Length: 116
Image 1 (tube, rainbow, N blue to C red):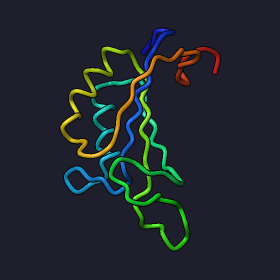
Image 2 (cartoon, helix red, strand yellow):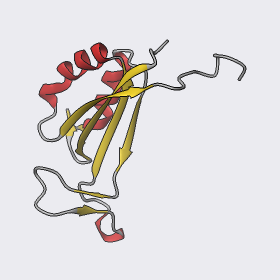
Image 3 (cartoon, one colour):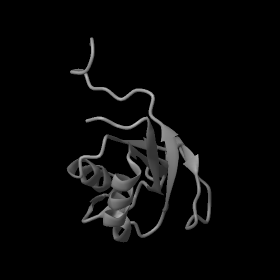
Image 4 (cartoon, one colour):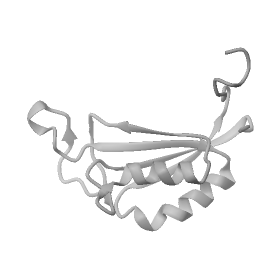
């Protein structure tokens, strides 16, 4: 897959305890991104944060491992593909935020590409 040098980054901010059909929402989102053949997706687990629904700041502490920590899903691809993807998952994100920004793709290759 080739990506143009000017790509877009979709960031989806949700909670770790958010679910879709009983499974973590972030897992469902990554599976949907893969099925729609987006360039790639990464899930990042936050150690501290809050959002629109948070009454308190969520933080990573040994005694609070089961709390609802923030999760960020990052996906880079073309603007059109990300807009289409976001429209397809929009109704399943009940609380959270999504941002879209222009990025410069400097390297995007698999092990089969080039001299690796």
